[in-house]
Image (cartoon, rainbow, N blue to C red; front, top):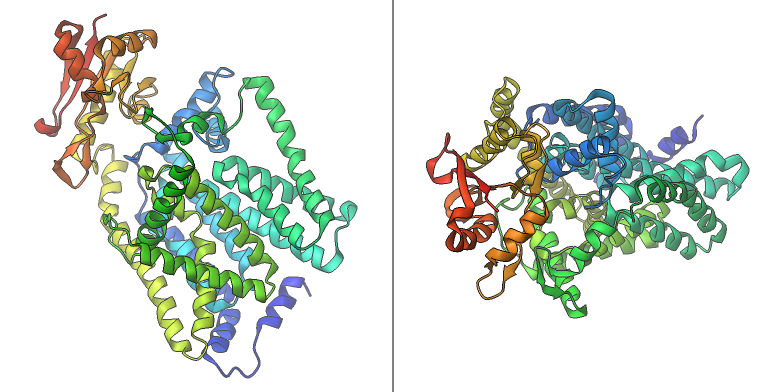
Length: 560
């Protein structure tokens, strides 16, 4: 009989007297049905929620462009905007099959499904079923996880690698418990564990904490040999990788591109200077409020996704519940959960410290949600031992709200993806985005190959511009502190030095649901001073207003 089967039999409670015991027995008896039902739900929701477009957030286009540049600019290009592993993977796909957006999206969906499989297989039976099942439902059906999968963001890829790390962490801890650390017979297992550490830390910059988290865990266990072997198994992969990067690409590392920006008070305004200690503390507090009082409950379907309100009291309550859950697993000496909690806690804290609060992205909190939810359900389970029906109601509310949110969005999306797959690649975008993307395509079709066009969302322009390279404009260049607009002479010199020949000006909404709320005025604040002082230097050559005249997009040729 296998170890897994022995563990499964041990989980069955004879003569159950409580609701929790009955749930445990039901879950063990129906394990395969539950597992395959959740996989089916994940696949069905992925089908109706599939998105054939590029996200307005543009990060998915950034990864796609990075993969394309790896192939077409080798070895002069190395991706440093954030962790490079996903663009490297896309580069391999582009080299093998060409730039096939829909295939990339389908592969991402598969990453998400297999990420759930590893998560389920790693933790099933390691935590009580009443704690595990609502979190498994979340992991399989959460609308944002599924959305990111079909949008080729890194999240699906990351959840897959995180699932592999969970899987091998469990195997290593079992092996240590049963046989101690014996390198020779366990060599393959330790190498796979080290590979999982390397992959997850190279897939997302904040996941670099996996190394100190694993070492801290084994130090707390006073298992120095396991700590040393873990570090060695990681370095076996990390050191050759760094050598290859420095030799082939002559690049620094995955943190070199982001490092300077993360130190700034404002990621889009270098003139404001770097953050001080008080600023980083305030950044952490702000991100905690955004992530744990707003995003956390939006991801559960309990708050409106467009809500901007934060509540410090909710943040403190959420943190308190999570800490109680950690105390419970620590008292129970659940080694697996202690290790995963140390890793997740460290990753969340690092993210909330280093990332500027203005970015406020749900994905920052999302990747930590499974373990955070496990800790919260551990705490809630302990609070409700005498009121177990109350716990079940809470668990069902969480699972139900997550599923309802996903089905609601999926059925709303299905007619859109049908139109997209039939050839209408702009359907589903608001008029401002349609004009912008059609303008990008116009640049690819009508400007000479030597034209270098500045764009507010250059990676998106690259995708819809059929692989034409655009110059990114993420902030007001050469800003005049008196006007908060560009100095016209300095801006022109800047563009000339970078070889920019044209610039796109568009009216991208600040609020996608409200066209009267205002627009992203970065390019406007660059062009207006130039047009005022040197009107002859900007020649309008194209206007894209096929969707909405008030949200039209323009292409100007810069006359130096």
